[in-house]
Image 1: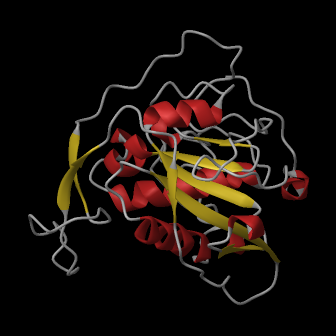
Image 2: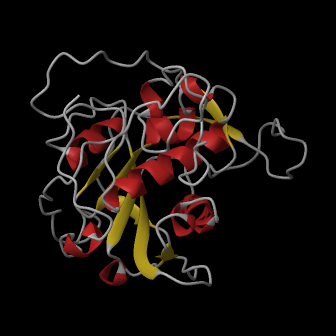
Length: 262
């Protein structure tokens, strides 16, 4: 696997300036790739083995709409509905209209906003809060890289733009990285989370969708901080968060956090 360019832990400062997206009047500008995305190969590498297709329907607690069934976890009062993820969407987005402060402590603050592609039955505010909760956890990058993330609703104030998009739109936002409708990426100032992965998770995290989402967020935001892919350090060890865990664990155990790979 050919890794992309590593910009270092301070590389976030070199990210391109925020650009308007297609829910405004201007199209997205092309963003230069920084590192190769989770679960993908470099554009110059062909013939990568595609992932096995996931089921089309899943129960997810963050979707919009009325409840149809009880959640599998009796400790939560949230209900879930079954949703589908279309292969392609309109390429326009709903922005999360919520602002959440960075956790208290030391370290630089990086602002980000969240956009969910229209047509996906996902509530942007719920998605944004889940991403912020992950990034604010002490086991996330604030515990290892002395960085804190702050969720903003105004894209002009955001240094990073997090998208949850259909597989087809993910491919477009991630180009020239080859996500092939199956995986996610970080591309310039975009952190693109494939809705197929957000909703269905991955076989390596079978039965633990929440844990997979934590991994997905930490992995792609880790790329934005300048971290490249690593391999399993040994059979039975916890997988480093920058390992491509979506593609398999190679003998490691699943681990969504940067600070607990022991």
